[in-house]
Length: 449
Image (cartoon, rainbow, N blue to C red; front, top):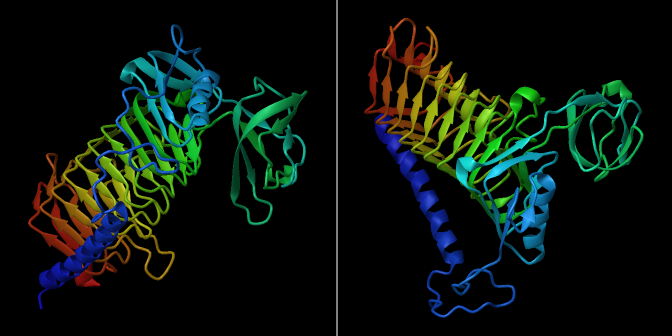
């Protein structure tokens, strides 16, 4: 049996598994049940609702709004108001809003703006040394100085873990103050000992949430003021940062200038990022984080980040379609540790600093590579320096299909490679691709291993 036939059989088996999963989803969605023709509001049933003529909506703005102001407290007050009533719409009117703390989003929220006319940003950060030991059960810290910190501010505490040497990151709010002592919104749950050189920085995600669902964020501009802020790792922050959330839609949102990620979501399922522009962030444009299932990233522009689209660990059954990833400093797209059964289709990746699409060598276990992924109908143009690679497949990656892609170099060929397959890679199908302008169209290192 030919390699191509074997590849097709494996892909069809994967497709059959996906179809079976979809059938189970349809069953739970109510397929076969009588149609609901005249829905009523029934306690505890949020699946079918009447088409109400008016729903709860509250406006926030610098003037002439239900809640007047231009900081995080007025936006949070509006959000908390609709939360108390079971959900609704908060409309942020045109203006510039400067935050001293994150906006914490509840479930069942529509958060709407006016596109480029509604700008959410943050004040410049400061980093202050922690001046006294705090144990994991404490709910306060003592700083070397209070600086410009105020009660109500969002902060990130960082220290070297005294037991294993890793970096501990703790996000809290300041809720009381006496001199340089601050009470925190929650207990530390990690040791902040002077031996770890702990610090307190006024950095935070602009929008964030944890363990919530059914939220729409639309028509907003989020500016992280990155030049005046310390870096916050994308596992903890970004212009938008979500943790353990479901069914979020982020649409027509611009996330820019964050000293970290533009959009990051960790262990979040059925997240849609659509028609967004994530650019000029220090780290990642869009970061489907560890364990996230079925993310959809569609028709976005991801440019001038370090990496455009970063599939983290264990991201599965996702679709990246119709996106443009432009001039990202390292990689247009990176995929690796157990990121399986995803599709990257109809994207344009141009001007990547090193590699257009990177399949990482995440050698941490028996089978932790980005297997069973489809890369189809993408354009990858002018990648890297003299030794740039359009698609680089590393480690023991297997059962990947590269089909009908257009890989082009309009510069000199030099040492540039269209597709490189590492010597440990498994079954890789390469079919019907157009590869032009490279020194080497396909370098298959397995042939010489």
